[in-house]
Length: 625
Image (tube, rainbow, N blue to C red; front, top):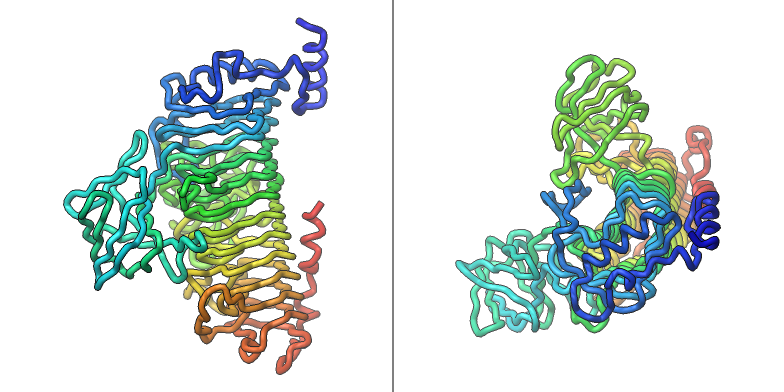
C-alpha cells in the first residue's frame, strides 16, 4: 500500500470526516462508466460504489457529463419510506447503504433516470456528503395541456408535444417510462407567472368529468368543477409519489451541497430517523429549456422523525406539487391497552409505517386526541413490531386511567432543532414551510412567493396526517412574504394551528414562545397572521403592503391579525396600510393581549405578572449560532 494512502486512512480515521487525498479518489471511469454516451451506467456505478465504501474517506468522483440510469437487477430493495407510496421492491440507482466517511462528487454532472426508481439512498450511514450534481427524470408522471376554448361546462385543451396518453371510456390514462396510471386530478397553472392560477384549487374528482379525444393531441373535458382560463395550462396527474430523489434513513452527519433536483417522482430530499443534517444550496428548479411546469410530485424537503440539528440554507425551491419544507415526527394511535404498562400502537397515516418508532430507553408522550395536549410521559423498556403497521410498547410505569383508545403517542427523543435561512420558495401549490417540533425553530431571511397557501405554518395534524407535534420556541424574522395564499386569500400568510371546535376556553395551549419580527408582507389581501392555541406570541416591527400583482381583490371582512384561544400576546410597532387599520385585530377566546402604539386598544393589566416567561426574542439568538 502506498505511503500516501496509509497517511490519508489514518487522518480520516482520527478526524472522523472526509479527507480528500489523491489516493482516496475513486473515479467511476475506472469501472467502465463513461459520461455522455446515453448508455446505462447503473452496473458500473454499483461497482464503483462498492470500491469507494471499502476505503474510509473516499471521494466517489464522476467526471463532468451526463449519466443515464435504468433499473438493473443488481439492486432492488424493500424500504419503508415516510410519506410515500408503499412499493414492494424499489430499484435503487446509487445505494450508499452502510457508507462511512464517503463523499459523492458529481463535478457538475447531470444524473438522468429512466422509469420508476429511487435515485439515491443513504441508509445506516455516517458522514456522507453529496455535492455538485443534478437529478432529473427523462419523463414525468404528468400530462401538460394548454386551454384553447371553454364553452359552458366543456373545455378544449391541446396536449403539449412529446407526451403520451390514451382516452377510453371517458377516462384519461397517462404514460411515462415504465409507468402508466389513470389521471385522477387536475390543476390549473398560469403560464405568465408559472404558478398555480389565482383562486385555483386542485380538482381531485376528475373521475366525475368526461374526457374525449377530438383531433390527435386535442382533448375535450366536460364536468370540471370550474372552467380554467383560456391560455392557461391544465395539468393532469395521478397523485402518485413512489420515490423521493434523495432519501436518507437511520443515518447521521449527512451533508448535501450544490445539488439540483429538476424532477422527482416524490419529494426531492427526504430524511427519516436521521440526525444532524446540513442542506446547503439544494435547488429544486425546473430543467432549463424543458418547457416543464412542475419539478417534484411532492415536497422539496421533508424531515420525518429526525433529531439533532437540521440546517437548511441557500436553496431555491420552485414549482413543487406540495410543500417547500415539512419537518415533523409521527403520531401513532393507541389501538389497545394490553396490560398496565403494555400498549399496542398503530401507525396513523397510510403512507407512513414500518420503520422504527421507538427503542429501549426513549421517552414517549401520550397526547389527548381532542386537544393534542400531552397528559402522560414514560420511558420504553421494550418495543416490538408484530407487523408493519403496529408497534407493541412496554413502559417503565403504569399508564393512567385517562388513557383512551384513539389517543396519539409521540417519541420525544426524536424532535430536531431547525434553522431554515436564506432560501427562496416560489410558485408552488401548497405551503412554503411547515415545522412541528418542540426543540426550537429559526426561520430567517427567506422569501416566500406565489404560493397557493400560507408561507409559514405551524400545523397541528394529529387526526389527518398524524404528523407530530405542535411547536414551541419559534422565531420567524426578516422574511419576505409576497403573494402567498393564491388559493386561499382570506387565510393568513403565517398560520399557527388549526383550532378544532372541540377546544374549550379552559383547555391548555398547543404552541408557546413564538416571535414574528421584522418581516415584510406584500399580499393580495391584508391577512398576515392567523394564530390559534398560542401561549406567548410576539408580533413586532412587521410591515404590510398590498402587492397589486394581480387585479384588485375585494378584501374579506377579516382582520390582518386573527387570534383564537390564545393568551400572552404582545403586538408592537407594526406598519399596516390605511385600508386595513379599521380592523387590524380580531380576537376569539383570547386573553392578556398587549398592543403598543395602536389607537383604540388598552394594555392588559395582568400581562407582566402572568406572562413573565423567557422572552420570545431569545429564541433566535440561541438557534442562530
